[in-house]
Length: 207
Image (tube, rainbow, N blue to C red; front, side, top):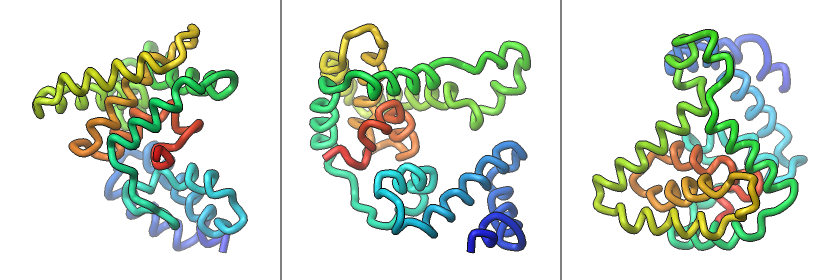
């Protein structure tokens, strides 16, 4: 069973399907590896902690919900849960949030030497994707006439987040803004904006 997901005809089929959606060779290789990991996780799901499986399966959850999927809670309920979570953050969990937030806000150092090669491949640049998603959220809030409420959600999250120098305050506002606009955004954009906090409490667990 393991070999079926890592070599042979099944892998060739998966690669062919991925190539149709991701023509870039680097992206194809990463997607194939992710698909193999998910397939193997499904194979041993009964031996995995549910939270671990959810984390591994996440790349495919927006396309096909995983086993045990339950719909997200209402928006106001998710935001309330997020606001309750923020003041409790401290120690290693908060440090991890800060590290992920930093990775999502800083372009790769190699971009300076390789020029447009990396910047053109936005799909391979987490920081570029994060910035683009946030711009889309702001534009959508303005276009839908929800700017005031949107800013209020941001402010509430920024006030609730720890102000201890680790730099997660602004990212808390971004995550709250993404959750607030989730009904008019592609779910992958919402998950990306929430990503710094996902290791502490997954988006789906906000209830």
